[in-house]
Image (tube, rainbow, N blue to C red; front, side, top):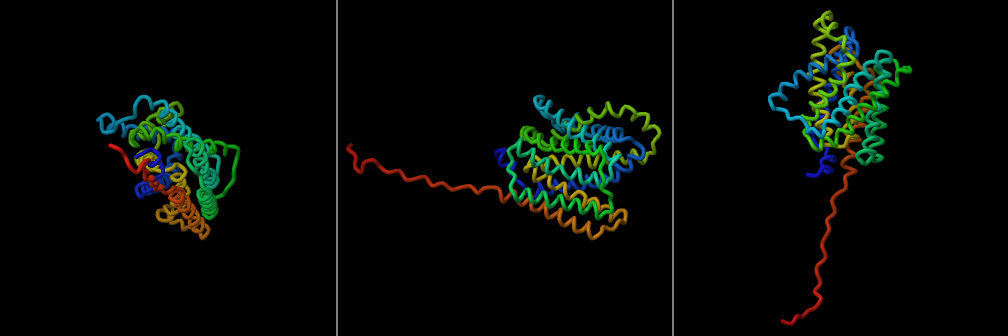
Length: 317
């Protein structure tokens, strides 16, 4: 099967993988908030990815996971430093000064930026239906944020979140050529290793901090390492390897709704009517965007070869 054919697929496995990633990533908000009570954003990010790397190095050493070829490592290093190191640092420090509601709206720009980069870098077609779906889903995110009672205000540090948006969008789009040459598992593990190395200079105070923080915060970081980092990135990159980046990234619009649902079941925070309406819009926008894949895929044309016409009705032997 050709790369172009794979990039147009959006089957059940792809949808399930993207959905699993979104649910797991949505559950990470509580763990991050809890961990930041004891760690700085850089320390928490480094601890999270150090644990993930320590877990993943075992199957790599055992030969169960094959890392990409050396020729792909310059690209993987750049992607890991962008989509993991830069994204985690900008998101963490940005959220220390910006409200949760404001951060949710800014991060919700990622699918649109991803779609634009995918069109420029990969030549992915952006139809009017795709644009409409992204716009509808974004309006749903705004309603979910307002309905949850979160204040939306912005400060100059909002620029940090914008950097995070472009960093994660760059990671989503520019990994696709690498995924065409290597396995999803190998690329994900390699990018986690690269991102972890990039975080080390910013978390040099982590060893001293670990000695004094409660064990509960460390267990919180362990969950972030196993769930959102390993399982989340594997599922998300698997979906990206099988479908257009713009379509897969549209699933991010459902994340605030899933987070509200988790807060409802786990914390008893009942969503408002505005949140419910926003959820319907977010899901509807994603469905519209995903449906645009099939609508934009042209049907193969059947070409009938013309019958050969003899140049002479009679031949001499």
